[in-house]
Image 1 (cartoon, helix red, strand yellow):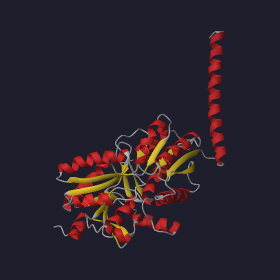
Image 2 (cartoon, helix red, strand yellow; image 1 turned 180 degrees about the vertical axis):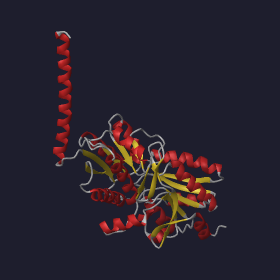
Image 3 (cartoon, helix red, strand yellow; image 1 turned 90 degrees about the vertical axis):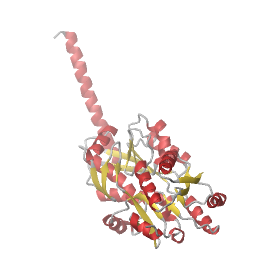
Image 4 (cartoon, rainbow, N blue to C red; image 1 turned 60 degrees about the horizontal axis):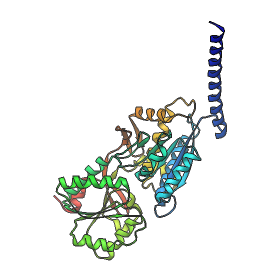
Length: 380
């Protein structure tokens, strides 16, 4: 080996050593900043913690804190959580996501529902950040999106099965202004038509709508058999109250668990279509910790943070894991026992549990069978 070659080898060796020292220094810096000897995984969480839908954010925050408290100091990593309130105002959602990415430098982003998905591509593309949510019906997913909820097709199939069984052939429905809702609308209308169900009235609403009486009179004139409510609060409450004020006796069915915040006097006897609720064992754990009833969406958000922690704790704990390392561990998990039962991995990038029927009875939701609902309506 000549002198020039030896110099090149020494330069390459010195560079390699410098890179290793730099990586270790960064890892040590990260550990020192966290106040622990463990690598840090920063989790940014955007929730509606104020406004009309604050009950959703409060439940989700409970779930996060519950899972972290249960983990305690026993994990390979320190999970540093940053909460941001968007009040379910989409402009605030976008600002919160930008802050978590550019200021807090989070490794993982968690949002409440699919409404955030419209804002993610320009912000998270090539950012190396995992997006995790307990629910999304969008089919236009990026490789950083992972979910612990039912797919659009699962939900639609269960809804149409119910409408047919209860002999509802003329449907009116109200839904929020979101792109994912438009996907649901398109597929629902096609599937409904194939099964002899007509959409006689529909209404897309924003969260500031306060008067639905004109639309309700149109629904009555259209002789709808059922009103499907996909609206957020306060839309659901307004829909129920104004229907009662007008003396309209058309029943309402709900397409998620958000109706739990509506007065029980208005929802008693109504059904909704959603995934399994919390197991009895999970309810007891939650209620022992927080001394209040376990309501939607506590268990569903717990599943999401539980998936993240389970997947990360399968790794070696040697530095903050990359997006690829976390998602690879998720896909290898296949299934896990969550707060709502066993969740199964269904590619792409989704863990699911069965969709079931729920009924409001005596102010509380309970799971019921299709036969029980048919019996209540008097259908043979």
